[in-house]
Image (cartoon, rainbow, N blue to C red; front, side, top):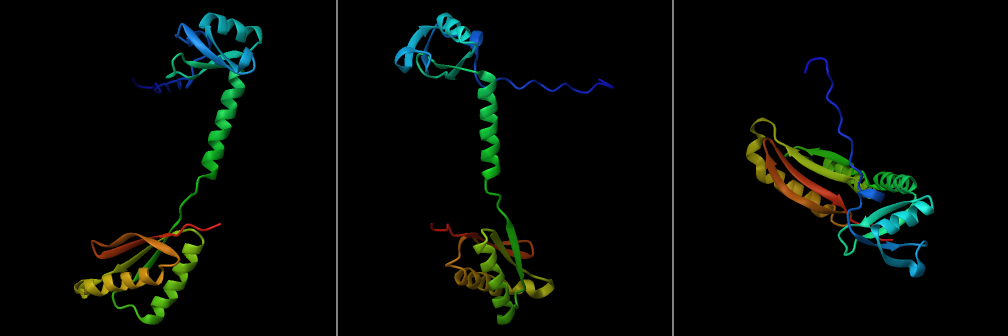
Length: 183
């Protein structure tokens, strides 16, 4: 297969339209039917849609009989794409901020880093606090754990502990997530 680029498969349509609807009869909902909905033969429903220069679109295939709607399919697809983009844009992008400690971190340094963590949590970012053990300081694991637990306790009103202190290699981690803001 030299020199050829593999072809991209066409994305299959998420909805069945017009002649692709295989059910014998369908429930048509919308403005084009008396009373808002009616059970019709599929061929009749397609003719009704074509008479109005629109498409018959299967909205709920699992219903019995399948539910269809007479709409402009191209416009419908455009609206769906637009909604998906909007949902994606509004999805919260989580930010992770790291704060590093040593096993022998002094009170002043601890308070300085605590203030930063409070600001991060207020902004809605997650905080990953860790104690990095260098060389022989690995023997002070208890100090590191105590430090992280003290840190979590000091941040209780701003964030919730997502993961308790856990050792990985030469680092002990603690994850904090911001508390839900009350409106």
